[in-house]
Image (cartoon, rainbow, N blue to C red; front, top):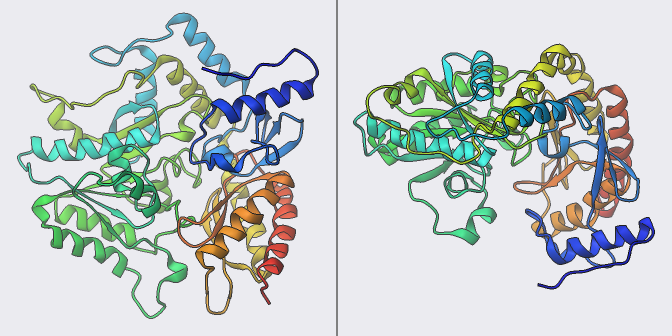
Length: 465
């Protein structure tokens, strides 16, 4: 193994060493590593405070994406770290395989109390992808235990992102993410998503729900195990369901004995203004998958939350859900999650989101006068701005134009001006904003102060009228 070394010296030398070591040894996730070199530094974030983070050069950035939809309480929360440290002194680790410990029990109870309906059984994982993996496996095994071994197929939505493990990736509806790893698992099909901005005005929006019933009929109702959907779909740009959509999806799932999995890895823990996104939209799932904000990202954790009905066959006799992981329900992480939920309650975080969500939406709506802004959509503290070539016709950009627009200008320019957000083209081009839940009018004004001039310049560069 070769490595880069350097003599102790100035901070500039230390920074340069970090850059060299990162380029030589670190493999970042979903990152074009070839873009970084002497002319383009790897962004190295070294500390955070509240809604802001600081890079190795001391420059401050507004974290307009809550890092990755997950730092709900912001950065620098010593109380969450202390909770983990105190737990580590008492019990640093013990397995959840045939044993348990107080923090996992307390956290499972707390989550069950907050979850909608009879979702009372909590299975801890390490990430959102693993939560989705667990849910897909449970759906298959549940039907097998119930005497329906052929019910194994999954229905998901186009462009939806559900994770990167093989089962979760199979459910993911983003072609570019799937193609390098095909063939994937069998038995997953995709139906249209709820991009209402591009849905024909002369059609009934509930046709999108009926497409699920049609797909179940096509696959054969005795072969379909579950439908998996996000309350507000992330990929594609915060796609909201039309009125009545999830009510009809629930009816369809009941009619065909199909489980409804609500993938709330992003949409839970206050992101939509409620503890769980299905509560904000108003539907009752059979299973919820969650992660990210459950610890405000101070430690990795996810969970699958199952209804009493789905869990019941595994709670007696010799039936066992044959799935698990070494770190699921880790005591240190569970202690941090409990401290996170204490802070949610004591600091009235959901009330803060409710009081400020309209102002956040209003700020983003004020950008609609720009030629490049076609749509603004989302809810709570979770929004996307869709970028278009022509507002009247809703004409989008070509793949090459989107590459130039997003990666050639927007992403770098917003970052250079001190705003971290997401420029995304896993559908039509969008800019996504999802700040920490502690953000307020001051941060909204800062976001606008960057977005407006950058989007104005983007429109000029793309030669819009």
